[in-house]
Amino acid sequence: MKLPSSAPVLLRWLKRRLPTTLFARSLLIIVLPVAIMQIAVTYVFFDAHWQTVTARLSEGLAGDIAWAVESYRDDPTSEAFAKLSQRAEDSMSLSIALQPGRQLPARRREPPVLIEPFFAPIDRSLERALADRLDAPFWFDTTRYPAYVDIRVAVDGGVMRVLAPRERAFATQGHIFVLWMTVATVLLTAIALLFIRNQVRAIERLANAAEAFGRGADAPAFKPHGAKEVRRAATAFLHMRARIQRHIEQRTALLASVSHDLRTPLTRLKLTLALAEPNSRTADMKRDLGEMEHMIDEYLAFARGEGGEGAEPVRLRPLIDTVSEGARRMGAQVKVAADPDLTATVRPSAMKRALANLVMNAAAHGEHVEIAARRWSGGGLEIVIDDDGPGIAADRYEDAFKAFTRLDESRNQNVKGVGLGLAIARDVARGHGGDITLATSPLGGLRAIIRLPG
Image (cartoon, rainbow, N blue to C red; front, side):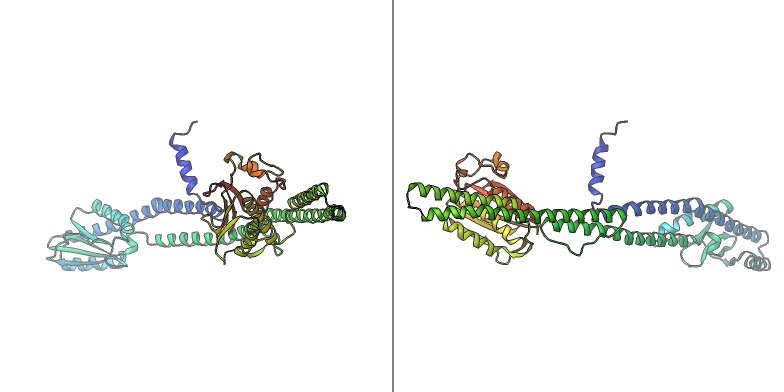
C-alpha cells in the first residue's frame, strides 16, 4: 500500500515537532495515552450517560409541570390551586406560584460566555422536554439561581411560575466525575514525572561522565545508578575507562623508556661531534643529529598525545602570547586579538603544543600572522590563526591532517617537518571535544580554526 504524496511531508512535520530529549519522549509515551483515555472516557460519560440521564430527568420534570398546568386548567379556583401547590411541594419538591396579570419575559437570560458550553446541553434537553409536554408558551432560566431552575408557563389570566430543584432537571454529579478524572490525570502525570526524571538523571550522569572523560577530565564521584540496563552500561563504561587509562599509562611509561634509550646515544654522538675538529663533515653531521632529535620529539609527541595531563581552567591570552613570542623570534610579524579574561578548560601543555604547531607553521610560511580568540555562535570558543603564506588547495585540507603526510606544495618544504604538526594539533583539539578546520585566510594564505566546547 503506497502512502499518499502528502504523507511524507506530514511525517516530517510531525518529526520536527516531536520532543528530542529522552525525558520528554518518555513523558509523552506515558502521559499521551493516559490523556487520550481520560478524554475518551469523559466524552463517553457525557455523551452516553450524563446527557441521557439529564434528558430523562428533564422529561420527568416536564411531565410534572404539564400535570400541574392541566390540573389548574381543569379547576382554576384559588382553593384548587392551593391544594395543587401543596401537593406539588410535598410530592414533587416543586414550588408553584400563580402570577395574575403577568406575561412571559420577552427573551431568555443568556449565561456568561465562559460557562455557556456547560449549560447548553441542559437548556437543550429541558427545552425539548417542555416543548413535547406543554401546548402553551413557556420560558425558563437555568442560570439565575444556583440550586433551582426557574420555569414559567403562560396560563389563562397570567403566568404559572415553577421553581424546581436543579437535581430534578439534570444530573448534578457530572462535575465531580470530571474533577476526579482531572485529579487522577494530574496525579498520574506527577508520578510519571518523578519516575522518569529519576531514570533519565542516571543516563545524563553517564553521558556527562563519558563526555568529561573524552575531554580529558575525570569524574571520580560517578557511580552506576538507575535501572538495571543503565547500571550495566555505566559499569561497562567504568571498565572501558579503566582499560583506556591503563593503556595510556603503559604507553606513556614505554615511550618514556624509548625516549631515554634514544636520547642517550644521541647525546654521546653530539658530545663526540662537539669535541671533534670543526669542518664541513661535522657540521653536516650536527645538522643531521638535530633533525633526528627533532623527528624523535615529533614522533613521541604524536604517540603520547599528552594523555596523562589533567584538564584545568586556563586563560587563553597568556598561552597565545607565549606561543606568539616564538613566532616573532622566527621573524614573523604577529598580531594577537583576544580577551584577557577568556578562559577554557584544557590540558595546558597539550593545548600549548597544538597552538605552537599551528602558529609556527604559519610563521614558517608567511610574514604576517594574526591570532584571534573569541566566543563563537556554536556556544564554545574558537582560536583563529591566519597567515599570508602560499596556503593549501581546498581539496587537500583533509590530507594535511593525515599523520606523516607532507604535501608537495611550497608551503610544506620545511626540512625539519615530518608531517605531524597538523595531526598532533587536531588530535589535541579532538581530545578536548573540539576540532580543527582549515580555510582560506583573508590575508591570502591559510586559516586554521580551533573550536573548543564552552
